[in-house]
Length: 269
Image (cartoon, rainbow, N blue to C red):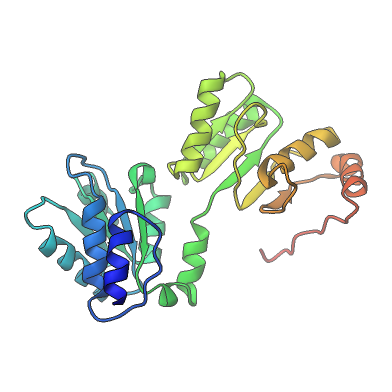
């Protein structure tokens, strides 16, 4: 009964929480195969699993069920070299299965670009969200960093681009280019947006906002924070401020306006 109720929403691409039972992997793979665009050569489905053996098993099931569909799957678990994984991904892979640590490493090395991923599966989610794997999954998140000048934005974007997927937005860019930078962050093709401000763009919410440069005026700070926490004022982002003694005046104004004290981050973070 559980399988019968789960397979239809999976095939429709809906969000599903499914109890792990005998045969669940087959049901999961049926839903995955139904969502693929086989004319595309891009990676479209990402399956996170807790163990090497489960990754290999899932890959075999997908390839067996999709044998006559032309599906290509790859299991990335850390047992193969980064060079091999990168070569395989560049040669047409529809479905990528891997442990969180391996997937995170591929994202950080730019071996995996998530632009076309349309489905994310957490197989044995209770195991994935326990212990070290949970930390690795949480680490795959989005960040907005605010700076005060275009030159600083471009310099930081160049430096961070060596290790992370980033996009940039500054005042000299036209509206279309700034909208594209926002879309990259929303789609996951970039995990860091580096910007002077986001005035005139759609509201976007991320887990972490970093004021790499403190704004010079109170209202500029309020706009940055409000843009991420929604016009309703509900808190949804952690705001981190990089401040120097020169920022004492604006910090005082912020604390007085918000009626709360800004706490110093622990040194062990």
